[in-house]
Image (cartoon, rainbow, N blue to C red; front, side, top):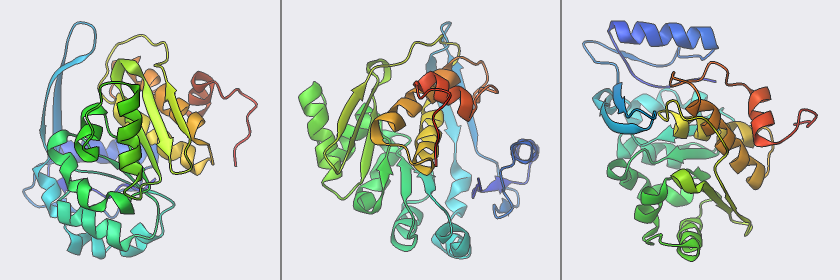
Length: 258
């Protein structure tokens, strides 16, 4: 895994760099912005571990310009899959969509930032919105199963290959251009800290794609990753592994993957 981001010249960046080093994540092509402030995300949970409030400072990502990305075109174009979110500038998202001949997976992040994806939906491979983001990007109000399917159909009509709509306590709805549709319920899990569950789900979707997994099992992997993430007080559950994810998703220990 290689991470292309922007770091500030601060202690927080050093801590993240150390963590990436331990995990084997290559950050060598991520610039350090002099006097910049590394992105910070602060969340407050309720007594059950569910998030009540979050505040983020993502201003440093304005430095991830098309020009900077173009200087790293070899890295981007040589990727097996490119995972992006909407914290980066809209023009940078457009640059990636137009210039990277690899599958692009996108997380809309929030309704305020999701609009950055609207012009490039047809150039993306996989989209993972929540219910509100799916409504915004599809133009369809989701009120029942029929409207949920209509929203997915509208998104796929743009040229998207696949969409995974996270529905909180109602599970996940997945659809692809072949016509396959699946709605899975949430997996049983002890709620300790829900922060990071969506990110774990997106990571599992990318992992499952690289493993050659089909739509339904990919959705199961996403649900399993979210459940595992939820059961740890830490944002990234230290127990997270492909082995544990396969077991929680119900793939079975003996399943062989490409």
